[in-house]
Amino acid sequence: MSTKYPIIISQTKFMHRDTLHYPFEERGLQFGDGVYEVIRIYHGAYYLLDEHINRLFRSAAAVKITLPFTKAEITDLLHALLLKNDVKTDAKVYLQATRGSAPREHTFPSNVTANFYAYVTEQPRNKANLENGVQTITKRDVRWENCYIKSLNLLPNVLAKQEAKEHGCYEAILYRDGLVTECSSSNVYLVKDGKIYTHPATRQILHGCVRIRVEQFAKKLGIPFSETGFSLDDIATADELFLSSSTSEIMPIIAVDDKPIGNGKPGSITKQLQAEYEQDAAITPEHTTI
Ligand code: PDD
Image 1 (cartoon, protein in one colour):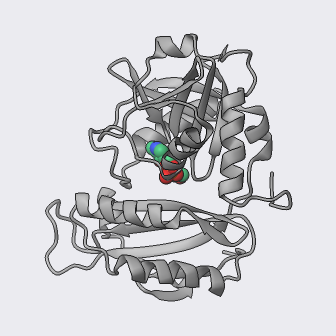
Image 2: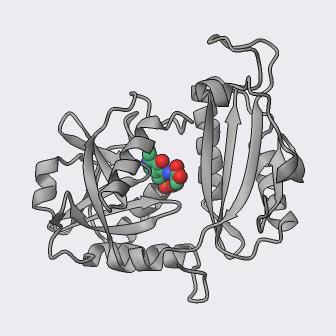
């Protein structure tokens, strides 16, 4: 396959992406038995790299996968990956670690090493969506109770996001027991009377790396940030709504289930947070956009 960035990491070595093959009896392929990360790159430099590496190690420990490197080693490898591909654009790294290759048995195989790979793809900023905002649907959150683990088991997320797409929407907002948890691949926030609300960082949501920053930006701007969940009813009277992720950044939500949020335009607190994000990620006007 032709790609701008053909060099990948496999285990702790570099190789061409076309030369990596796995046996079909692989735990990630057969059980989704693994964990992953998506790390944003702006102008050839990582954004929030340490946060992602820390979460990778937390996820792996939670599912008892031993990673084949230390945090310092993977940090060096990921930096070298950008150099080897001469990455200068806005991009992202996808990486995953699975329990390994072994005959199919639910229980852990003995004497198996984790399979790991990481590769770079281009990821231009979606400027139109960032400026105009996006539409969403709501869906019951039918995922398991350990959503803080960034696991490869994404079927409920995939189905929810596909349904959003079929409705002409960007994301699906998930709710459980009446409270909004997060979106299919992002965290979500509500603004009411000058205060930001979001689901607490429990086992029921992924603790987003951008979410950490949203809280810091809010603090800097003097905007109260409350880890208090909100309900679908609260959405009906919200002033603003926005989501966050490494690929979406801080994205205004302008409608939920065909109903406009506020005046149906990105709100002022969301815009202030977006400005902080651009400053923090050192984004300049010449950055690539779609
Ligand atoms: N998704 N919640 C879920 C369920 C996610 O999958 C993600 C990230 C987030 C935001 O996390 P962060 O701010 O660390 O990117 C929240 C990535 C981008 C993905 O699966 O493609």
